[in-house]
Length: 586
Image 1 (cartoon, rainbow, N blue to C red):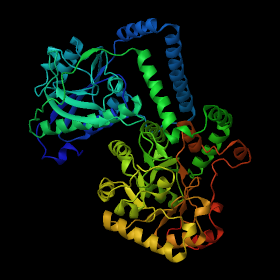
Image 2: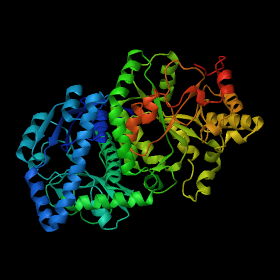
Image 3: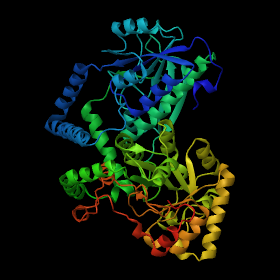
Image 4: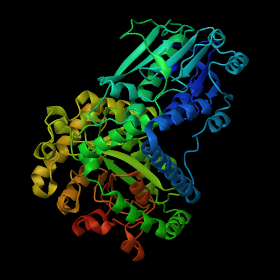
C-alpha cells in the first residue's frame, strides 16, 4: 500500500478525516494513524477514543461466572492473575530500562503530532456527535466499532467508513477476532470495510478480504492478521475518496451480519487457552522449547544478576561501546513448516520488545556504527535466513510498521523452487522457498537482501573450488535479481564447526561483511569483518536476557556477561587473515 500522495496530485483543501478508535492503542492502529497524520492529501483532524462501558462488560462476565460455577471462577481468576503478573513484570522492567518507543497511548500520539484527541463513553451517543461536529470532518473512520447513530452518521459529508474485523457485531466494544469463526468451523476470518448505516443491516460493502485460519492460529495471531489487512483496506478506501474517486460498492460475499452481545470473558479465555495448548502440542518450535520450570529458574538467576548486568551496560554506554545484537529468524507461520517455524504472535511479541527497549537498526546502518568504533545505544537487528515463501505475514508486519530487516536467501533454491534439504530430511515437505518475484519485491520495499549461498551448503564440507563457485554464483544471481551487488554473506548453518579459515577468507574476497549464527554481541571497533548473530529465542523473557547481556549464571559471575561470543570463536587462521586489513575488516 502506498501513500495517498503517490496516487494523485495534491488537492486543496485536504480531506479532513476523524478516526474512531477503541480504548487501547495497538501498534498497527498507531502505524495507521501515523500514515494518515503525515499524508499530504489528508488532514487528520481528530481521534475519538471510545471508553468501553465497564458495567455492561462486567455484568456479562459476572453472568458467565455464575453459569460456570467455581470452576469458571478459578479459570478466569487464573487468567486475570497471569495478565496482572505480566503487567507488573513489564512495569518493573521499565524502571530499569528506558523505552525507545514511547508512542503507545493516544495522548502521546496527540502531543507529538498535534492531532486533537477526545474521549467518549460510546461512539453512538450524543457526546460523539458533539465532538465530531466540532472537528468538521469530511470523512469518519471507525476501526472495529459499529456506528449506527443517525446523529453521528449525518456529520461527515463523505460518510462514515467502518472496519469490521469479526463475523458478528458485538456490543459493547470491537469484539474478539476469530472467536465466532473458530467455533463455527469456518475456513477463515472475513475482514470488511463498509459504509455505516443507521438501520439494523450492514452498510454498503467497499472492500473485503478473507484471512485463512491456519492449523495452529490463536486468537492473538488472528487479531494481528485481521488488523493488518483491515487498516490497509481502510487506507485504500480513503485514498479513493481523497483523490476524488468514488468507492465502488461490492456485492456481499455472504449473508447478513448478525449483531448482539459479545462472548463472556470465561468463554473467550477457555478458547484462548485451548488454542494455545493446541499450538504448543502441534508446533515443534513450541513443543521443544524449555519448560516453564526451567525458564522460571533461569529468570530468577537473571533477576538476581540484573544490577550487575545494568552496571556493565552503563559502563558500555558511557564508553560509547554499546553492543549491537543481531537476531536470526527463519520462517514465521502458524502451522508446522519446520522445527524452526515461529508462530506469528510470538514473533510480533519479540519484535515489539526489541522496538520498545532497543534501537532497531537496518543492517547497513548497524555495521556502519560498529565500523566507526562508537555506539551510544544498545542496538538490535532483525534478520531472516534461507528465504522461505511463507514469511508473507511477517514481512507485511515489518513493512507496515516500518521495521527494518535483512533477508539472507539461498538463491539457488529461489530460482529452482527446490525445498531445503534440512527440511525434507526432518520430515517437513511444506516449506517452499521464496519465488524470484518475492525476493525482488523485498529489495523494492527497502529490505536488505544478502547471500546465504546457493543451496544452503555446509562450507566445512566444501573444497576451496566449490566454496568459491557457490560464493560467486550466489552473489551474481542476487545482483541480477535485485539490481545491486550484495555485500553481506551469512554462512549456512553458521555454527563453529561449519566455518573454516579458508571459507572465511574466500567469503571476504567477495563480501564486505560475513556473519555466523553461534551467538554473541557485536561491539564497536572490533576487527575482522565478522558479525555474530543469535538464533531467535523461544520466549520474550529469553530475548530480554540476551539484550541485557545475560550469558548464564556461572558465565556472568566469571566476568563474561555481554561477552558470550568473542572473536576467538572464529578459526584462528581466519582471524589472523582478517586482521591484516582485508576488505570488510573494521
